[in-house]
Length: 122
Image (cartoon, rainbow, N blue to C red):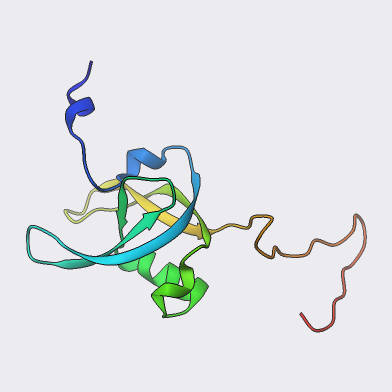
């Protein structure tokens, strides 16, 4: 038994993604934190915890899906950890997001082995 077993949180933390996971974005809503700051929180299909978006992850989603938050609903995203600089200047694990493709989403075309892939209209 560990103390951390009893420290339940409504939000994902970096340790939750020690092994990268692909999740489906279900919805998003503003969350007011105890310090009064408001952050956007993502809810994923089949998950109880939410992911509070920092500036880096908000920018990533904006680059992938545009500025309309609803455009990312139903999309698959890979959540993983990466070493980053924390608020106090030390190195910490941070949650990062990257695009992933599923069979239901279009994926990049791969050239045949040893050849070139030329496409028109893509």
